[in-house]
Amino acid sequence: MGADSVRIEPAWKARLEAEFNKPYWDELSAFVKGEYAAGECFPPGKHIFRAFDLTPFDKVKVVILGQDPYHTPGAAMGFCFSVPEGNRPQPSLQNIFKEIESDTGVRRTRTDLSDWAEQGVFLLNAVLTVRAREAGSHAGRGWESFTDSAIRTLSEEREHLVFILWGSYAIAKKALIDTSKHLVITSPHPSPFSAYKGFFGSKPFTRANEYLAKHGQEQIRWA
Image (cartoon, rainbow, N blue to C red; front, side, top):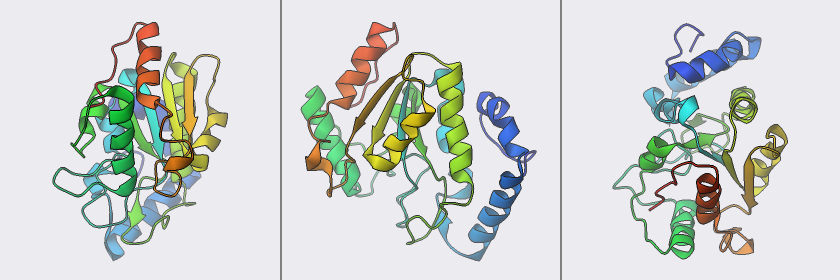
């Protein structure tokens, strides 16, 4: 994962080039390579930057922020909250589906959220890798600096984006966003522990689409 070997969508790479040349990146790269060599880690190496690759910088319309990848085998696929088709949706994703149906009136069953990514929904985890069965095991190693830079760059260089921040961890990232030119939607996390404390009924999907339409952008087909 040295600067020259990072394979990431060109527009993103151009804007994040400075990050690849900072000391923390070399330390992060060495750590991630060592972890993947030593044992099972997620997502598969080829999907670490998948959120960036499927949603180019200039195509981003909505940002949904997660914390770190699913740590159970077969679940992580490079997008926050997304699960490969054919796998049982994680509890948070099940609650997201409930809110989609309540909010939009349309039911979604497809667990693979790549169709959102292709429409401009940047499904970003703050930490892009994790050790199998050990949640948060790659936190504090440098990924947060990298993804904070991505959020900050979107805020600075783009206009009229929607940032959907669920839970206190994601909401803390609001400090990186210029709220005078972007819409920030916050609520409790969709996990079973907090969904009934304000996530259900928050209507993030119609609110995002109303904002996009207001600013002349095509709406997201959530379902």
